[in-house]
Length: 48
Length: 245
Length: 221
Image (cartoon, rainbow over all chains, first blue to last red; front, side, top):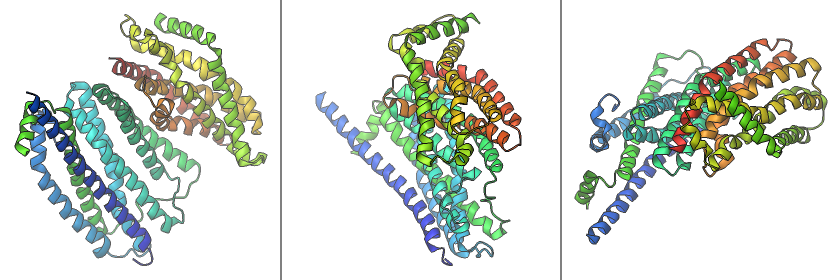
């Protein structure tokens, strides 16, 4: 990259990392949420 | 988007619609990102004056644009939520904020990484970077306020009002910072750079669309999580959970 | 009209009973203004350049720290909720509270600023512009701050949260307030900046009470 490698890859890399992390965190949030809600629902069903 | 299709103002309708759209949005995002990055990094010609570092602009400019547009989107949903009192609008506003904040941060980061090789400094107090920094703080404020309030309705409405106050102030802030910058004879840094070659414009535009699609993806994902959390006692959520397990 | 003056009188009387609050704001202003030279060094030439900006930031921070007081007392004893159901428009009552708040937290800063300005080696004509800029600007800070104070009623995180919300909105006032003084010092004349500050003040007077009233309703409902 004509000597500017650190800057170009530092930019593209950080952008890629952050956007990927955002997606990963969202996926994990969804997963945890579904598990928690399913568990809650089973508890309620056990009661009734 | 769901603004005009009032059918989707019901969480129970929005959820499946978002779910169906996601694969397409994700595919589009990946495709355009790949094309845009390839063009930006490899096929766009080397700039005669600025060398390879100018390639950072291909992600800096779209990120900055997104941070600004998403703030307006967030404020629009906030306004809709306050006026029409619809949960879905507030959920979408809540879903938009983090993505906008991340783009603001990335605009600042890439701006710094572009400034260092070009102007010799990691940070310069030029009008656009400084305004972007303040925009980042505005995002953080909206998110922090929402997080600080336990009562969900109050949290929605308070952060909505703050978002609206912010959006009204953004032009004032930008104008003030620009004035401040020219007055103090700051370095004449212009991030839009020299006239761009036609071939250089393409990667930027493609990545802008890619970032838009990406934003749809994250906003829809986040909105779906919000819906599940808030509507968990609804019958349709119950059926959904049952069908899963 | 009586709603505003009545509220101002009431709040000022209440504030007089707790004079310490006003004094702590003033002392904060003084201390911060004293900290900068200690951190930067005593060369008058440097201080003269930095003075307007430093004093403006110090005044801004002092004003911001006192925001919690605007609604806290009335919120705690339930008077605030009563105000929501009074026949007088809530925005007028809020305006009254903001005026009273400014009289206790903004005006003292304006009056003390020339003295602190001397510590920074500012000339009399510069001091004059400084005072006018603060006179126009601190009410805007109180008006904008009222929105932040209303939104954060009763929340944990207290002053820091209000700061995060309100400081970005303060930026234009700071830029033109300090800018007026610096423009004057550099011979360009501060009238343009001061006019803009005046415009900000008018805008804030028109819009902030209503926004803060809305925020109060949101926080209290």
